[in-house]
Amino acid sequence: MYSSNSEILTLAFSVVLIFVIMTVVATLPFYLLWNWIMPLFGLPNLSIIQSIGFLTLLNLLTLPYTYRNNKKYGEMS
Picture (tube, rainbow, N blue to C red):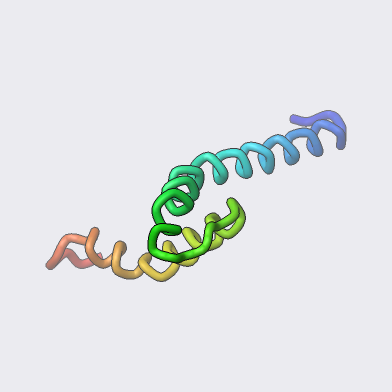
């Protein structure tokens, strides 16, 4: 499929770059809203890296509740 190592390296670099761009784009609304609203309540501004980490932490903490609420009650898997 790929004839050389440079093509594999290019593909790997492209995948990582697309992942990073999509992560930043998905985090941007949270980042902008936090830095616009939260200083009014005395909370500090966040960097984009801190926003990514904060959203990841929130997703990990709320994942069990999201999974449980999306299952239909009475359905056995």
